[in-house]
Length: 249
Image (cartoon, rainbow, N blue to C red; front, side, top):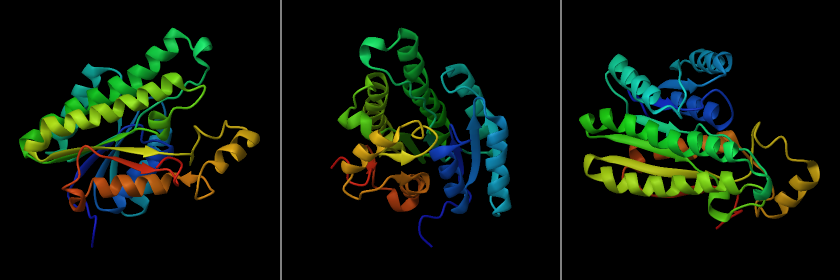
C-alpha cells in the first residue's frame, strides 16, 4: 500500500481543529502515532485523540505554545524521548487577524509573527534534532495561497505565510544532507472555522476566482500533507504544494 506511515511518530501543531485535526486523523489512518498539539483547546485535542483511537489508530495530546521557543524545545525533546523518535512535523498552528493595514495594530502583527513564523521555526528547530540523529525526517509547513498572491485586508497574515515559503526552502537546503525533507503546503479557500466569518457576498466573489468553482475541505489539504510525509515523496524538498482549486497557478 502506498503512503503508509507505520511505526512513524508525527507531531501536528494546532491539531485540535480544522486542517490540523484532518491532518492528525489522516496521518493516523496511514499508521503513524500522532501527537496532537494544542495551546488552549485541550478538550478538542482530546476529542481528536478519541476519534483516532476509535478508528483503530494511536495518538496522544501535547499542550504547549509554539511561540515559546523554550516550551517547543522541551515538549519536542520529551516526545522524542518518550517514543524513541520523531519522524514527522506538521507545523500547522497559525492565527489570522484581518484588518486593512491602516487599522492593523502593532500587537496584532507581533502576535501573528510570533505564532505563524517564530512558531514554525521553533518547532522545526526542535524537531530537527531527533531527525538528524535518525538521519531521516519529514517537515511540512502550512502556508496559504494568500502568502503567494496577497489579499486586501490581510497584509500581516500574508507576510507571515509568505515567510514560511522562505523558511521551507532554507531548511530544505540546510538539512537535505541528513535526509530531512522540508516542504510547504499552501491551501486556498478551505472550509474551516477560520473561513466561516466570510460573508455570503464575499464568498460568492471568491468562488468566481476558483476554476474548480468550489471551496476545498480540510481533508483534501490533509491528503496532500500525508503524501509529503510519506516515503513516496522522498525526492521532493523545498517545494510548495498548492491545494487551491486553481485559484493561483
